[in-house]
Amino acid sequence: MSALLVDEWQDKAACRGPQAAVFFPPPRTERRDEKAEREARAKAICGQCSVIDDCLDHALDVGEAHGIWGGRNEIERRNMLLLRTEAS
Image (tube, rainbow, N blue to C red; front, top):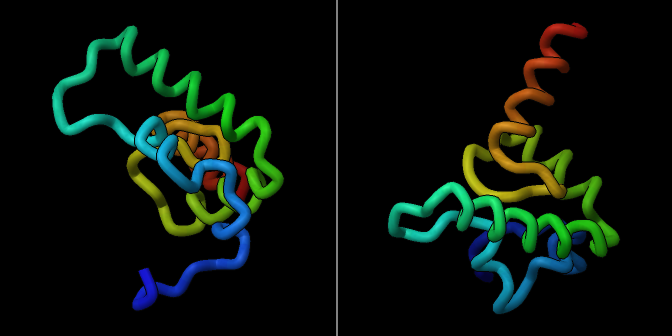
């Protein structure tokens, strides 16, 4: 990761470490109930994170298409971006 620029907030993120896998879908097809459970676990970690707002801002700014960022999934972020566009 040394070749990548990492924002300071990322070093403080609660999702860093072995639990990071719950923030992204597995390589195999995931049942709806499995997805809901995985996302709930990820969002619970986000709920305890001191940089949740920075994370969400980053995801919205760069258009992250996958995973849980800032306590929001892909659909929730897409809806937030639509609302931003409509408000402009």
